[in-house]
Every structure is written in C-alpha cells, then in structure tokens.
Length: 124
Image (cartoon, rainbow, N blue to C red; front, side):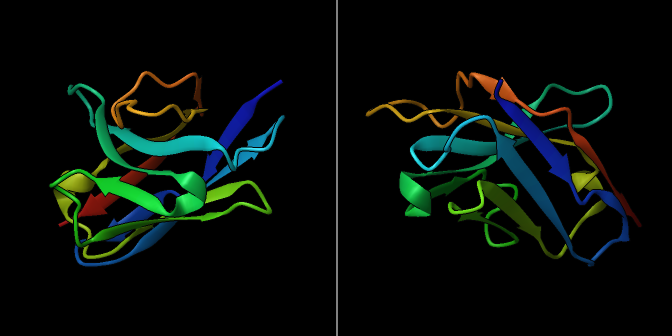
C-alpha cells in the first residue's frame, strides 16, 4: 500500500524558515514525480512546486520561487520542502503528492497519491 506522510509543519514568525518532509512508503519513488501543494482556509488547493527525474528537474510556483526549495533523498524515499523568508500568506495546509512520471505530463497533475497534510502557520 502506497503511503505519503508529511511532517515538519508548525508555527513560525514572518521571515523565518521551516523544512517539511514527505516520507514515501510502499514502493520506490525515484521514478515518480513528487510535488507539494497547499490549501489555505477558504481557498482552493494550489501547486507549490515539484520534482522529477530523481530531482534533476524542479518547477515552482511564482509565489514561492526563490524562497522555497525542493530536494529529494531517493535512497530514503523522502522529499523535502525548505521554506525560507516565510510570509503570512504562506499559511496553509501543505500536502505531498506523487505520481509516475510520464513524458509531457503536467506539473499540476493529476497525482495518484496524496498525504494527509501538515499545517504551516506564519504569524506577522
């Protein structure tokens, strides 16, 4: 059974940093596209960033570009989201997602597997 488990969320002041982790269980995810999404209260879920081809290819939403960095430890089946210079508008539940990589597939989905999410709150 495939399972994605996020951790690392919490409360941080504006300008601070957090690192989220997504541990994948059930299969080897090195050939998978993995991504982070987030959903703020009352808003639709939005794409944050993704990684494919063993982490050689990454893509970020404009809203986080230059502040957030995705990395992967393929040996451990873990993906990270390093979030720096956090803003109150980054407050959301952050979700990890994964899907088999296919040529030409969209970063935005669809994704086959999803985690339960971890809350990130940035205070002003």
